[in-house]
Length: 311
Ligand code: BDR
Ligand code: CA
Image 1 (cartoon, rainbow, N blue to C red):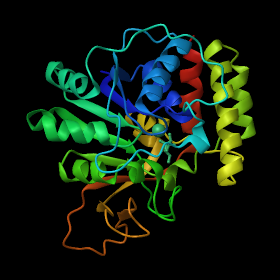
Image 2: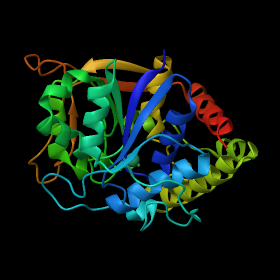
Image 3: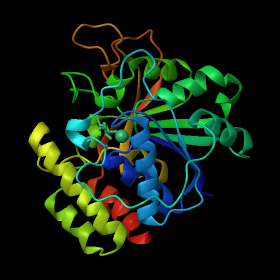
Image 4: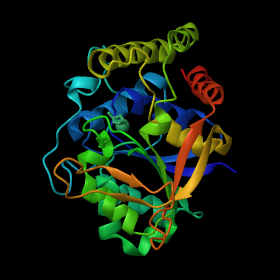
């Protein structure tokens, strides 16, 4: 039976592929797409989620707009990577569907309440919306099977020496979600940096030849060129769809149980994820599953089949 999934995202070039993988793969029953401020303002990310669905012919999945700003700090969008509208430099179609009347938190709550089975949340942006669900709907948290989140790192960061973008954009939200006790999987930079969008990957996706593939290839070219300019990585990493890939196929990555905490106070480390892989904090219970090693070919096969299955 397909896994019921809510995808909470901030598209963003790589989030678009997470939407496509969740919509196209038969192992996922995509119940809702919710959007949060992150790579861009929430107006942009809510629009871009609809762009992703319009291009790929995904219909009938409710899409909601969520939090405008992180819990305790100003939003600082990743415009140097994703452009001013979070899908910079790409021609965007007019969108084919309107936003759901409910906001993200209300939509997530309704899906959790109405589902016969517990629901998995794939989260590919700052955890602000999910933190609001934790605060406002404690009665529904047992309906969440687990959260698989792209963010954090077992090592270095990408917006500060130890801070990854999604963690650093809303550290308080991450802390709240970790404290909630909802089963939590962290898909951090340590593994997503193994998912490099090589020239071969780009040409294989373009060669699929469909409208989705052409649009996707454009996104990947833009993503790689901004990663080259700002991250010195000409083959940028396709972070976000790995959350969905791990729900579809656990064999795509190895994992380990560990303690993870997020730094809320450090002058140089706010937003850093402290992942205790060496089990040094013996008294602190393990609270997360940490993705470690990627099966690169398996991952790209999933992405390419999803793109090929769409319009
Ligand atoms: C994460 O930050 C965003 O820019 C990407 O979409 C991804 O979710 C990587 O640090
Ligand atoms: Ca993202």
